[in-house]
Amino acid sequence: SQKIEQNSEALNIQEGKTATLTCNYTNYSPAYLQWYRQDPGRGPVFLLLIRENEKEKRKERLKVTFDTTLKQSLFHITASQPADSATYLCAPARNRDDKIIFGKGTRLHILP
Amino acid sequence: GAVVSQHPSRVICKSGTSVKIECRSLDFQATTMFWYRQFPKKSLMLMATSNEGSKATYEQGVEKDKFLINHASLTLSTLTVTSAHPEDSSFYICSADPRGDTQYFGPGTRLTVL
Image (cartoon, rainbow over all chains, first blue to last red; front, side, top):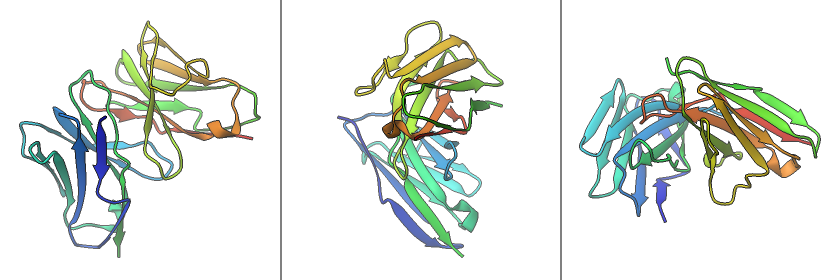
């Protein structure tokens, strides 16, 4: 069955450093992969989408990579700030009609 | 653009009652909406896919008679939790996808069944 794993439940990073979150998937060949941010008691908010033919995508301080050989996506936040503290979810999908399955998420804490 | 709203944001009810949660796409039409449930510190679990004008598609293990879904228009889907019990207490979130590749989520509904 399809499996999505995010590297750890929680990650503590010092403010100003780069936070790197990992998403691995098995038994799955997604055509694209999305990253979302979720704050406590709120719905997820879309951050970035990367397609299988793209190696890297950037948006301001965010960078996502997608390695279909390793079946892995990395999500980077550079110059991290306490306001970046949240849970980050990865969500691969095969095509536009496919339901999106979420990983368990990684709770990121940026320490001041 | 791509705003999804939910109502109510929070509901407390007695065991055995039914609760209806609305999900609206405010600035786009959505032939498909998704309903998720999230327990504390757990991931979003897809419950069902709501299809405008046709029956919803439920995920394995989700009781269709327990969680009634109605998608009567292109901007509104409703989830009714029938005969709610304390174990149904959870955070219910809907989403819709205006472009076919990005989910926009509602703010969620916190259901507490006493």
